[in-house]
Amino acid sequence: MSTKHAETTVRGDLETIRFDARNGSLQAGGMKVLEAETHNGSVLVDTVDEEMEASTHNGSITVGAYNGRRGSARTHNGGVTISATPAASGRLAARTHNGNIQVRGAGHLDLKTSTHHGRVW
Image (cartoon, rainbow, N blue to C red; front, side):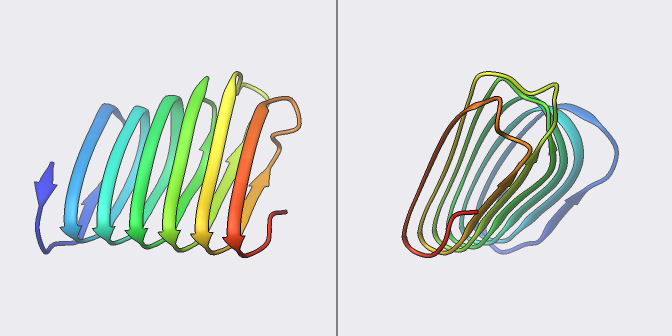
């Protein structure tokens, strides 16, 4: 999916989502693979089961249940919230320049977090 100025909502579970937006957010259910990039917009997904690469310049990234084995969430201005499950494995990276990072249930993962102006908890 590619959009310049539209909000996008995807209902139901999918194998893979590849989303690219200039000004628009993504709201989606469950998927195995998430690839999302926005400039001005948020990424809100219910479940990621395998891999995640999500980035936005101005917006937040939220994952309700992360079961993956490799994940990255990056934003410049916005927060990152991820809830990892016991099924998750491998590396998970969460980075923001201006915003908070909240990662729950990731004590068993190779977790990398960083923020310049914000808190990590």
